[in-house]
Length: 302
Image 1 (cartoon, rainbow, N blue to C red):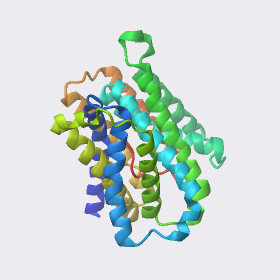
Image 2 (image 1 turned 180 degrees about the horizontal axis):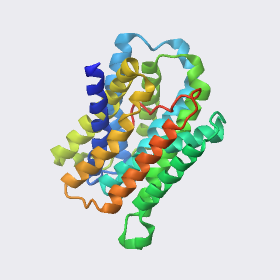
Image 3 (image 1 turned 180 degrees about the vertical axis):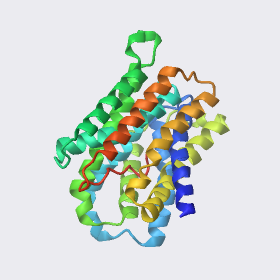
């Protein structure tokens, strides 16, 4: 049990540290190139373990359209939104905005699945979350404040991930496929898409900075994608999905702490926004009716 809680803490730290790695990478290469490196080095360990575990079968090819949809919503576009947003924002702001993922997941589940009838507590949680997002964006500061385009990219990525949860619950969960197989197909198809879409011109610039290179390959790829997947499902196996979602609360805090450590300005408004977003998430997840499971998080998130 101690190992499971240690893995939970490690997962939150991995997710929270991804934003500074994105920031370092996008100082040298484009967001699309950064996403390509992340998916490539996240896919390789997944594929190796999936092959050794023999969880990939020919029969799964008939579900390829579903895997393709998930590869776009929960990998390619989701990752791109977060990388493009982080490139324009302080990493601390990008990280705290990622804390709104459960809020958008709940909204998408309500709109498209109609499974959760919101309670008053859940409605308050959504409202608090959006107030926190507004405080993060600080629109009253105009051009001197946070880049609105960065906030919108972060929210676009978050919304894409929320929709992917709904799609997976409706079309993939009934198939009862091994989670490792799903993640491997998803990452593999995303890699193929990125091979087509990525302009590799100038990508070698990242090799001039070992910190940025290691951050993209090891931090974002091997740990932030491949390692996060293994940790996530180990935690679910040992503690259950509800407790596994606890990493949701750790990651934004870690991102803000790292942001402060690298010299980003952490104001009282940032702390208040973080508290409101996380408070909203707590209200939503604890306000669910007993018959409705709490939404889980994407294993390769941030």
